[in-house]
Image 1 (cartoon, rainbow, N blue to C red):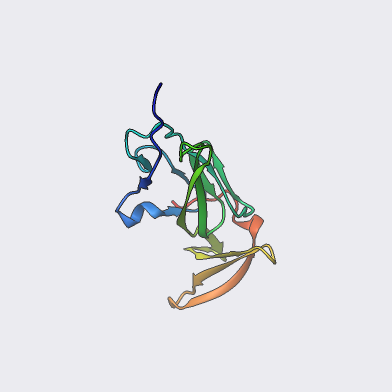
Image 2: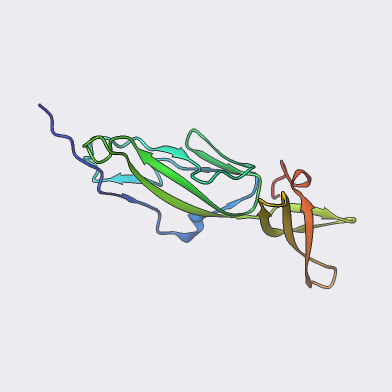
Length: 148
């Protein structure tokens, strides 16, 4: 009879840049970056989800994709991670950086946030003098674009 070894925690990258991603790009959530410990744990497969769904944010397999900016929390669940029928779960928060948004004839790299109540993305942009300005951009104006 084999003994089930429970998951006691996870190892995450110590490099803070791993927790930052660009809007419209994928972030791999795999065994190279998120490692259940101990390494001898019986159940080590992680199932990813979004605990508080946000339009434009999804996990496809082990890849996080966001078409909106802001802070995105993903949940990793290890089925029977405690070896007593209970699942072990943990949350990881990522910062999603802004997209290139055309303004007039110029293109600026914008940062901002998505307002779930209004369905608008508020971009922080910079005018021709380098001064920040706030403008509201409908979500569909930025979906599908990526930084270049």
